[in-house]
Image (cartoon, rainbow over all chains, first blue to last red; front, side):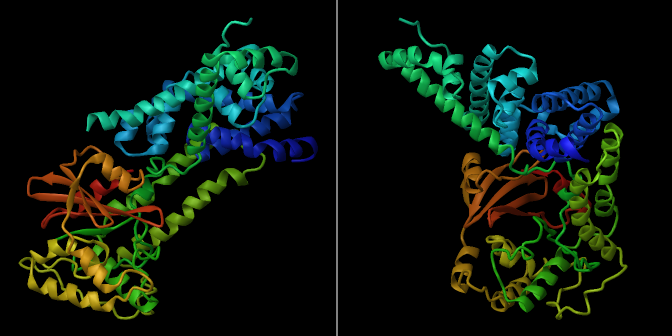
Length: 166
Length: 338
């Protein structure tokens, strides 16, 4: 890997993998997708790199998710890898797993809201979030406001539910 | 006079994304409007809590649902085919109570003998459950390889697999030894504590293991036989904790009565790491000293999932009543989730 791609890699690979890890909960999958993204960047070097890299990555995550649903065999594997993706925050809390509660809460968001939140967590500006997700810049504040509120409320619901039950 | 600030603007403000030219009217409004100031505070709270929650995602997930092999986490190395597979089946998991320097940091030679005896007692039957599970990871990795185009630089993607392989290598070695092949370290070890051979009539539980790790277990063993009690007493003297609890304190903890607690309390005591068996409803939760015990009622007794925090990690142990089938216990253990 030489020249501009190496620089891209040095600058964004860590952040990309971290975002993908948070998004998928699976380190291996995160690194695989990141590899794929940079491979594609080698083939067609992007002009606006950061939004491009993350947009391709998020597309790959979405596509894989859809493929998994269509292909029964992979669905079984997918479930085995990420059972917490299919449980509610209070179910995760039943298991006493705080990380799973957060992940379950994150999964209650719409895909767009979730992605915006994770991009913001990687230090993206509103403009870059808008470019990555294909949204209007003016909509980002509202998107993040909704996403943050929703995440916190879903998490609290998952946490609090059990106290009520017991 | 601007109307109230909507939530999007508030977050945009907090994110530093309001163009400087648009700042003053917003600040002017906030200076005059208590309601918007309150909403700004609320927005700031949502912002910081959601940031905190997202960072939680970076913590390694406790359940390890992606790695079925590590659910059968055996104490590293040196399983021996164990004839003293006794009435009370004790499985040492949580990556080795002693390997981590456990709650009792005994001097090395004593650690070795206690550890060995502990593992002897805990060694399960030799066949498939462990070996089969340990060979599991390959299929998942090949599916991942199907999905991605051959990466130009394969090394990073392989790192996680390598890490897992290294951990498994230890476990596989253990499984091999279990199958009766190499036992390279047994010669080097100091002699183990004598372990009573299993006879159908005898109800001698693994004499060494439960004492030093399980407060409350002693009480359980005392019901069984006087031999056990004597052996337990001998071990008490053998282990000299370095810098840990005094023998008096240990004894005190060991004879503490279990106190029934509620589920949220159990979680709290374990700092959120409470482990439960998937699919089983606990009968109750107990606290004994530093330990939390999840009690499941069975037809012929109780299943105890005892756990405690050791250096921030949840170490646990599953005990079953006399006569409980070992392979069932292993299956239950595989269902333990945090």
